[in-house]
Image (cartoon, rainbow, N blue to C red):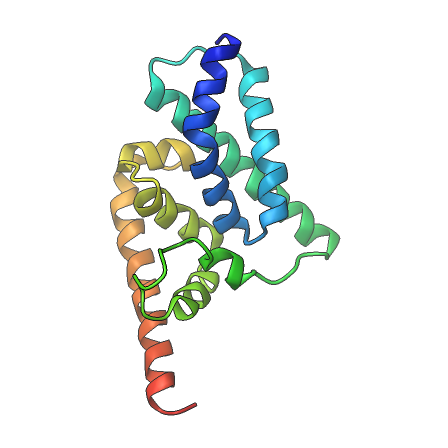
Length: 169
């Protein structure tokens, strides 16, 4: 990939990739660092890609692996900060689209990182089940069920939050 092609690829994908990383990690600064590292590793790999979708999937796969590695390292060192719900929900929806983004952000923060990754790739990035499977290193046939379970878990968390508000707590 020549420099002009890379710049165009970067411009088309950097914002969405950063949004994914910030939501998966819950840390904007870490997302900045991982974004740079992802593009660096993508270029360093020098892999041949069939098309734009294949390049993009490869990019998200690198980012997912880096985010997971970062999470493992921080837990191992004991410096893992709690999930930043504000960061996660900051750009999830435009103002006014969701009545209470704070509840959605809290609920997403209570999901496993793999569930957040899958939901974001499916609904934030619009990837197909096959693309999600390739990005996350899962079998394509399992994505449908895993997404179903993640959506159900999120719905239950949102219902619980709504019930708590309704009871006046």
